[in-house]
Length: 281
Image (spheres, rainbow, N blue to C red):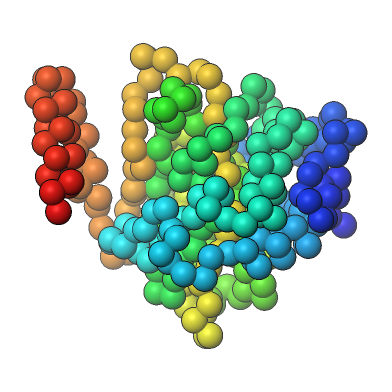
C-alpha cells in the first residue's frame, strides 16, 4: 500500500483533508533508530507521481544548478525545481505545503518546520556512473533565511536497483566506527532523518550500473527558526571511513581555520577578492 496515498496521482497535491495525526504512528520508531533518528518508508508516494519526475528529469547536464567532481563528491549534479516542467514543479511545491509538512512534523516530532522556497541544494539529484558522495554531515545554516537545517528527505527514483550497482545510502555513527545501515536506493523508497552535525551519511560506494544508468533521487530539506549567534555555521563536513581510501577534505578544513583565526575585516576583503577574480575568468 502507498504510504502517502492522500497525494493526488495527477497533480501531486496532498489532500487538505488528510488525517492531522498521520505520521505519528512512526514517531517512536523514528526517535529510537540507530545511529540517529531516521526512518525508511517503502512505497512512499503514488508511483505515478514519481513517473512524472522521471519523465521530466533533465537529460542534459547543462541545466544542472550545481555540479561536483572532486574526491569527496564525484560526478554529482543537482537540478533546482524552478527549471523543471510545470508537471514536476507543482509536485515540489506540494512538498512545501502545509499538509505534507505536518506529516513530516508528526514523524520527526520537530514542530514548526519551514520549507525552503529556494530549494538550496535540494531538488532532483543525479550521480553518474563511477560517481559517489562521501560520508558527511550536512551544512546547518540557511543563510538567506537565517534558519537552522533540521530534516532531510530522500526519495529514490531507481527502478530494479540492485546492491551490486552501488550508491547505497550509508548511515554511520558519530565517531565513524561503524556503518549502522546500508540502504539500497530503490524506486519509491523514502528515507527521512534528522540533520545535525552528528548525522553522518553518504553514498560512498561507486555507481556501477551494468547499463551505465545513473543514480537519481529527490532531495528535500526542512528548517526551523532556531538559528542564533550561539550556533556555529558549518558547511558540509566530510568524514573518512576507517580502512578505506577516503580522503580528508583539506579545502574545507583550511577555509574553516582561516575563518576562525583571521580578523573579520581581512576575511571580508578576501571574499571580495575571490569574487572579483572569479568574475575575470
